[in-house]
Amino acid sequence: MLPSSPDNSLVSLARRCASGDQEAFRALHDRLHPGLVRVLLRRTHGQHDVADEIAQQTWVAVWDALCKGRYDADRSSISTFVYAISYKLWLQAARRAGRRPAIAPGEHEALSSDDADPRGALPLAELIEAARDCLQSSDSPLALTDRERGLITQIAAGVPERTIARELGVAASTVNAWKRAAFAKLRRCLAAKGFRGDIFERGSPHDE
Amino acid sequence: MNERQLEQLIRMVADVESLEYDSAAPPRRLDPPARVVRIGRIGVGGPVSRVAAVLAAAACLMYLVWPWKASDDGLRHVPLHVRYVPATATSSGESIAHFQSTAGEPCVLLAVYRTWESACECLSWQIHEWDGGVMTASAGPNRSVSFPLDVSDDPPVEQVVVVAAARRARDLPGTCEQAEALLACLNEIPVPEGAEVDPALVASTVRACLPVEVTLVSRSFVVDGR
Image 1 (tube, rainbow over the protein chains, first blue to last red):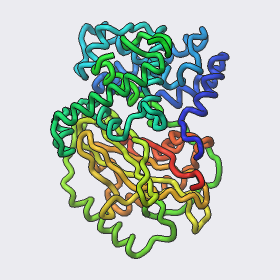
Image 2 (image 1 turned 120 degrees about the vertical axis):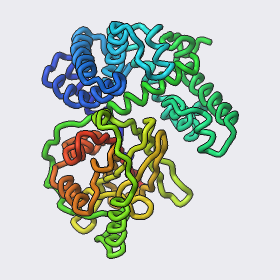
Image 3 (image 1 turned 60 degrees about the horizontal axis):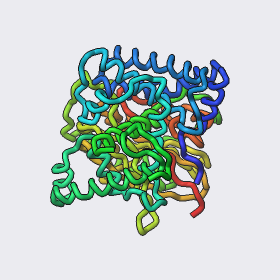
């Protein structure tokens, strides 16, 4: 199969950016900025001015991180790194506004406990990469089945378990059991990659 | 890591995927554009048949009489969250592509794909016909839509499918003339260099031919020798 990763040319742009290539940075910005604004619009409930402001701050922070060697292509793709910085800056903006955006309970937890310093974006980016790998992997004993993947994606998107159960024609308790099994598998996969305990706490992949 | 944190992490993964697949690059000329305009089904080669034309006409009629509900105009610039779930193979060897809407609202979907056109021996854009021969499909809140991909490897060229999601039916082609205009637009714009390895680059071509309110998700398919 031909490579289908969307990151191939982004990788090369990121490498050139890291060596101070401003043209590459502009190209990287042109590639990712529209998608970044769309993601931020979702997080800010369509507030264009806030989303644009955070996006601008994100690119300033990305350039700063690249110039100061705080980005490591071996630990995260550039798109995930850019996203992680934007997430931290979104947290900062939400805290400055003194309110918690009404998204999902998990986001509320994040607002109260996460470190919002964009300089700490690389560990978050690594965690997201690990989760992504766990969710997409299909050839390991810890790989999620299509049903498990679809189920926890729907649950993460806020679909009630009862609704899923009704659509699938099974009992809500069955969906709950499937969900628990899927999350347990995801936890084990993340632990195998060194992420265990608190969401931003990482130990050695092999220490138990 | 508790369930809430895992859910938060899954949303972050979905955000990153959205950031990658929905980002567009400015198109650059690579090769002469194909100029084939037709409506077809993924993997079915050859010219448009009379049956296909009848189905397309039925699709247009169905589209026009479908009870679309207008959505809030204030939300129209907020992208819909549609993600690709890896295709699964059926016992017949066909692959099924899944596109999952994780937004809590209904949307309308149009799928276009770039595939090999034997008549001109070139790659051209086509519009996927959903079940019943319709051009667009409606997806309920947080629901998946699936369609078959005939993963022919003859010739072994990279093929790309782009799913366009819109809140309002009127943001997607609603008549046969509009469908042909979309295909003409797609086939006249050169696909950017590097598109073979980056479906997001192909999406930039589609982006230029649809309203800005439309969310795009692209994915390459086929291609290894089966």
